[in-house]
Image 1 (tube, rainbow, N blue to C red):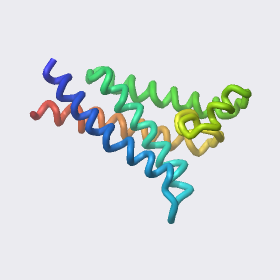
Image 2 (cartoon, helix red, strand yellow):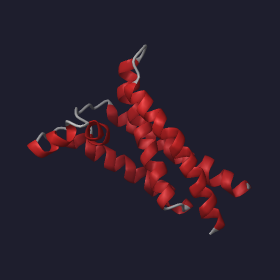
Image 3 (cartoon, rainbow, N blue to C red):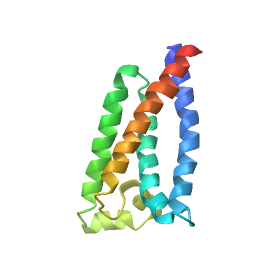
Length: 135
């Protein structure tokens, strides 16, 4: 029980770092803007969902399932960007909608989602779980 509380605190702290960094990357303008806005922010978006899920279910045996589940969900959202019904377009017209479900399909997003899931996996396993074990 104490372990879960420690892991949750570390996950929350991680989310407080990752979330503003993700928005900053999405809104950044300068050198490398296209890659940072689209792909680095996409990888961090996946890390965010891994950490948020781990915050809710802080169990070591779920780390792999969380990472794989987040990859599948974000990949499904990417494929959903090929579909443009009126209701989805209304959601995508807002900043929150563009940020959460995206607007434009790109094959190049999938490797960045995989990188984000691998990073989230290592973050959950190493930084959150193993460091909590030491304290």
